[in-house]
Length: 247
Image (cartoon, rainbow, N blue to C red; front, side, top):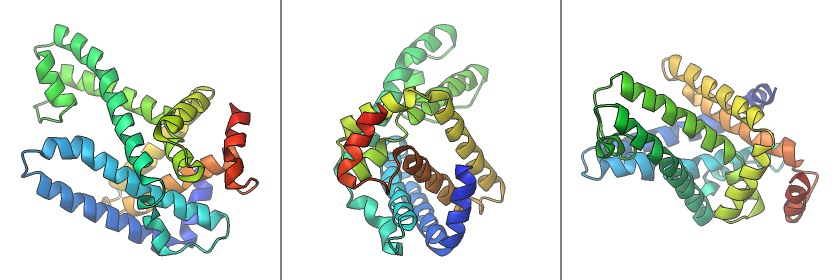
């Protein structure tokens, strides 16, 4: 239902959403292309790019919030992720990356005991992003890595919203989001998987569909936050009280 509402919302601001999505994709593609020739390309693609991408995507949340609250959103609002508690947003995404990598380490160690790959080889492939021809054992580890990523993403799902709209620190956002999502983890994972399916459909539509899929995905994310925290019924200063009540 939230994704249907998000689609109806995006249609009302199609030009702004599609234009911003196109800018994000072009920027990320060009930057990744040039970094591919850099000796630090692995670091960029696996660590720096997700952080930049995360900050850019927060513009969707801010724009959707203003539109939902009838505050006359403008195209420039989509760029306000860079001025809305940006340092904590960056730190939040760094924490997310570190947690997902640290949890993966013991799995890679066990994997090195049952495959032809050494622990160092697996770290290069899964942590640093080194390219490697795929076999069944690596595909199994990729599947486990994917499950871990979905779990971490789901647990930390509301973190960016707490930082942007609640002015929380990165650690507070991680803590609050994990506690809240753990009370309905299955539902949040289902919501995330539906969103992933929408992105896949967008890619299958000659990749052009991603221009509509991404705005719907992140607008629905904001709407889930708005629904759970009744944004608009409380002043921003009361958000902490709302969160405490839900906890």
